[in-house]
Each structure stands twice: as C-alpha cells, then as structure tokens.
Length: 311
Image 1 (cartoon, rainbow, N blue to C red):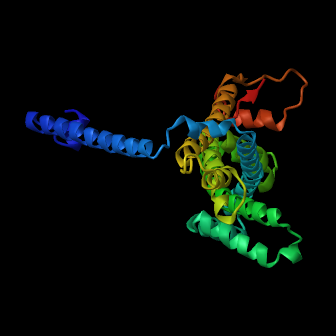
Image 2: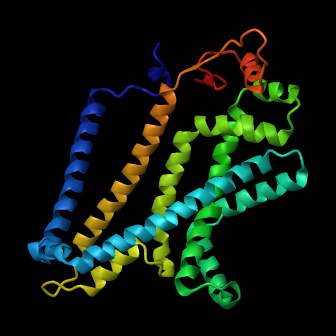
Image 3: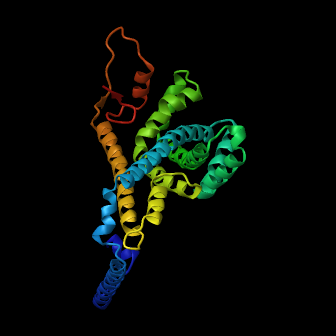
C-alpha cells in the first residue's frame, strides 16, 4: 500500500475532470483580470514610450543611483550589526547564568513579536525628540533609526538560527573541548559557533535578503532610500498629464530583484566554495605535538564531517 493512499483518497475520474475544469476556469479568470488591468493602464498612457523616456534624464538616473547607494549603506551596516547581535544573543540564550539567559530570551521574543515598522517608527520619534542631546543631524536620525530597527529585529531572528545550528553540533565536539580545559566561552566562540554558522549559512543568507528588502521601510520615516526616491519622482514627474507610476514601479522592482539575486548568488558561491574544500584528518608525525584541533578530530573522526580540518 502506498503512503499516498493512506494520507488521502485518490480522486476518481469525475473528480479529476472537475479539478481540471476548476483549474482552467481559475487560470482564465486570473489571466482575464491581468489583461483588464494592463488595458486600463495602457488607456491611461502608462505604457507609452514617453513614459519610459524619463529614464534618459540624467537627474532621474542620479536619483535612482543615490537611492540604491542609500539602500546598500543601510543594509551593509544593519546586516553586520545584526550578525554580531545574533551571535551575542545566541550565546547569551545558551548561557548557564540565568539572568543572562533570561535577558537574551526576553530580548529575542520581544523584538521578534513587535512589527519592524513600529520599531523603526518609535526609534525615529525618540531620536527626533533627543536629536540635540544625541548630536544627530536630520539624515543621521533617519539612518540610525532604520539601522537600529533592522539590527534588533534581524539580530533576534539570526540568534534563533544560530541557536538551532549550535544545538545541531554533535555533543562530542563540546565534550572534547571541555576535556582540553576550555571554558564555555571558548567552546562557544571557537568550536560551536563556527560550525553553526557553516551549517546554517543558507538560512543566514536568506535572512540577510529579508534585511535588504526591509530597508524599504525607511520610506515611512523619509529615509531617502530607493523606494522613497522612486515614489518621490513618480509623484513629481508628469508625462502627458499622467504620473509615471507604472514605469517607476517596474524599474524599482527590477532593481530590488537584481540586488536580492546578487546576494543569493554570493551565498551560493560561498556554499559551493565551502563544499569544495578538502576535509580529512592529518596524522601527526613522530614527536609532533597534538593540538586542540587534533583532539577535536579524534572526538568525531568522520571524514568530511564538521570537525574535519581544512587543508
């Protein structure tokens, strides 16, 4: 008996025909709705050649370039800080000290539960109210409100990802490290966290892609990233008595997709490079001292495993 027949009843001939009819009818309805929308936009002149000629203007290209740079700047700082915060929170949540563990757990649960948009907006209001005391300029207030919001939210998510990776490391690794006299901080930072990062790298990169897309929330606090620049130009430029919303949305969306694809391609390249690395156990020669890495390899002598030495 196949597992599929246990999970559900196989549809009969009449049901299969009915499902095909529903599929075709649904597809035609969706296609009809798309055609209707495209025709209405075309009637308003959104696909006219004049609408796309605006991208030949140097000012439009400059604004888009500046928006991309501001987006990448916020992403770069937020991504680095979120990874650092994620490591600290993951180690803190696995700490033997209850106050540290409780604080890390409460921090993670709080900022994972609060919508990121609310966090960014609250930080922006607080920074505006204390701008003179903190020494922020107008742009600095918006930048740091966005970056800190991205850091605390994505850092909390990355902490859970790293914690899962640390718990997945075989216990023999930590036991061997403790047998060598290492402290828990040393075990975490030199044995467990590096292996957790390598095993969870695809998930970490996926969350970085989310971080890149979340920079568009800076539009709400008037941070001049890509979405803000596109929305501002679409509202201010007029072609044939119409605003070029559709061309701006298409171009902006294509840029966001391209940036996310490049980041994903970088992640795939790093992962492939890690897989191509040679692994194995080197036998120490006579009279050579046995290092901590050698002891860890003996604890888990699996060729190509997480403890194999990189040649």
